[in-house]
Length: 200
Image: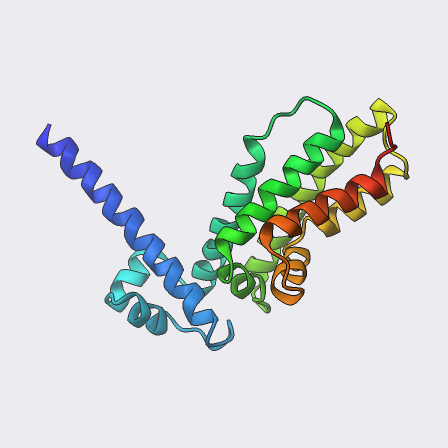
């Protein structure tokens, strides 16, 4: 039994250290570009030895990719728990709420990590997650098409829903336009409802 406790404690410590390193990476990226980021900067910001950083991540690129993966996994998990039945317009509204809630919780770090450029591994992961989001939205909107409630071509509906669920849209509503997160969600939901669905 003591051995199991020790293993559990070690796993918790490892997870906690990884989180600190990812938080430190985001904080450093708020100060410098991805090109200028170094493992030493992350170590100093996380208050750990440089060796500790390398024990968890092989490179600064891996740190950046994992910081983004953490953000992406939070949006993906928020969507996974949504019901996959019911009227399509309600499912799309729930999707908007889920994404916007994560953006609110993760801001301003989300802006920092999504502003990274020049790392091929990061670009590949970003493209993968964007493809996943488009696929999930398409599933909802295909259901609307089958219901007969979609009032625009499916391709157009997917493009608009994809745009309205992007971080840049949330940021333009909340940070640039000064809307409250609740009002931003309502605006996105109402705009999609009016643009995409037939009035009952």
